[in-house]
Amino acid sequence: MPSGDEIRSSRLKSFLEREKAVKAAIAEERVRLLKRRERTAARIAAIIGSVLVRHAESASDFRLMIMHVLRSAELTEAERNFLTRQGWL
Image (cartoon, rainbow, N blue to C red; front, side, top):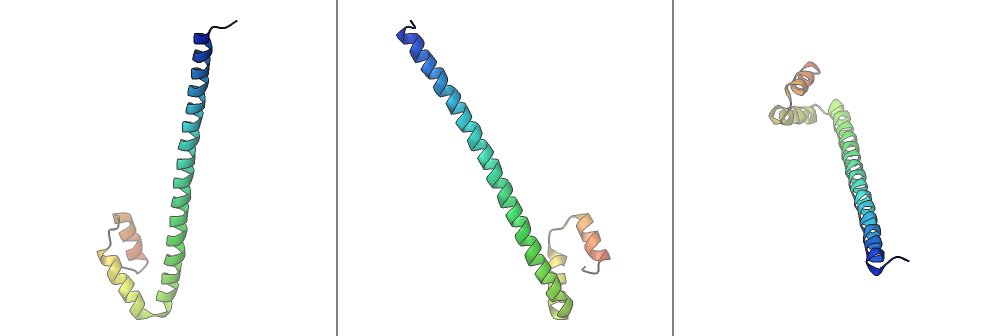
């Protein structure tokens, strides 16, 4: 028959294993939530950007305003070159 110390040691090991599993589950949930936030932000940007571009096609003054904003925006060189080739800069 196991002694009291052995039983306590076994319970402690069990608790530590459960703690490890819970911490892993929390980490997975954090990653899942972060990915969801990133997908949501990308979708919002795509929807708003699409609406703005469509509106700019029919309103030249609005297009000029967007072009002005883009000139002062922080863009990578590749983004700036692309927008220039597309007539936005």
